[in-house]
Length: 321
Picture 1 (spheres, rainbow, N blue to C red):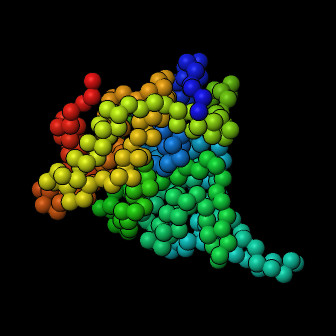
Picture 2: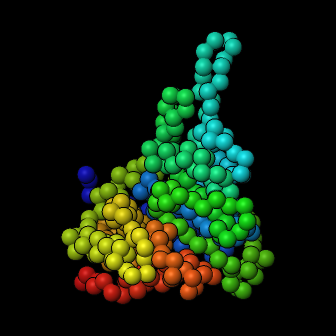
Picture 3: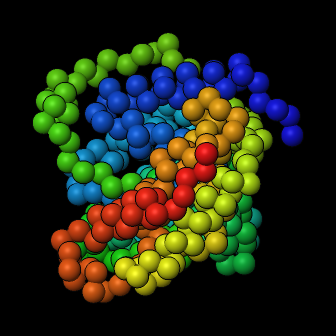
């Protein structure tokens, strides 16, 4: 695989910063989550955004796809949905006198799965195949999804009524779970003063460039010390007394590629410990199943308990030089 030139690294870093600034003019305070979306699409993964309604999650996904120059579709998940509403179905063509596959809204580059936890598990199962295998199977007919394919799912907090908790297998398919909180006072003031003028001179990244960048991310170098650092953090989640079930080996694999992508968009062709520490919370928080006693002690916000445990693990594990 060809080495990455310094010029390519600088050009990508500038483009990422430009996109972050453009989106942050529309969605105030979105710089970090936009970077995580970049990492997700460069590593062929997906991202889950969790927060109460009204925090611009849908707008954020729309703006990201527009700046990427990719096809965008949105599905509003509801309790009465069927898997075919997502994947598509087989129909009988009277003219041709045969069964044909009619594609569903999942056939796109960026799919916004809005309020994913408001639909039942049978729809989650249909989505799971698409996210992992990158294809859809209906009535024995298999159809590949377009590349790149990114699911940006939104979820209301599970304590709200009318929701279905996501199965662990589906949660594990999301590279990140990003918790969107209320804006600060300054951010909320900026929202009210927001100027919607757009920079029409900006050229979207485009499908071909994204696929090319994916190959370049694979060329980012990682030392054995960094590999051991990732494995040590992941294994520590399994031995912490507050965790009933820790992160799987698949997490280590995803962690490695996310760290490569983070280094890449920061203008480096090598991974450093700061890449690991920067991503740890968003990668691990939805992969820890906590002991019930820990949740009962602080039941107001279980996700924050996970972040506290991850921070403790980062303090315990020795950081490479």
